[in-house]
Image (cartoon, rainbow, N blue to C red; front, side):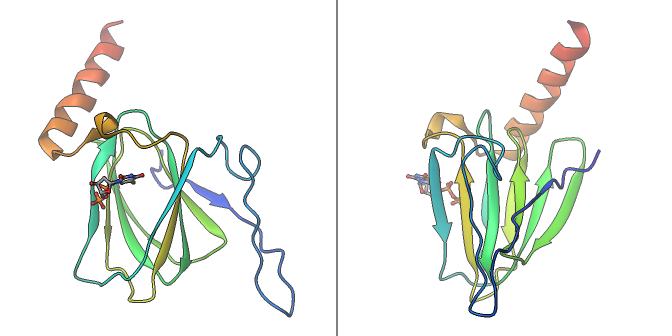
Length: 141
Ligand code: TYD
């Protein structure tokens, strides 16, 4: 199963402009509790390098582009996000990195929980241990 799950954000625009509407629990499959955005980026300054225990997020590159690495501890996939009408789902327990930001990149991220530092796993080896233990529990139960 692919780690790259895309959410279609239809463009309601016309000859005046592009126009995308995002509604909590409608186009986005969860209740949006938080939104943040990344801007003034540069290609040699990647971000991310963590996973969340429970948080689900959807990233939308409303301008420019960046390359995502998604990793569930068993598989790793890359995806270049470059369309304001495409959301990339970042599931919980998915190590994610954002690389190669274009200079004009504006990356919006929608999240289903408020900020909680305790929900982060910031060390890759801890992440691997966490997901592999969890998979072991699942096999045993
Ligand atoms: P972080 O999620 O760690 O991003 P990155 O891994 O790309 O550096 O966020 C950077 C800092 O901002 C970190 O100290 C936590 C803080 N932060 C908040 O206070 N609230 C938030 O909603 C987010 C996403 C981050």
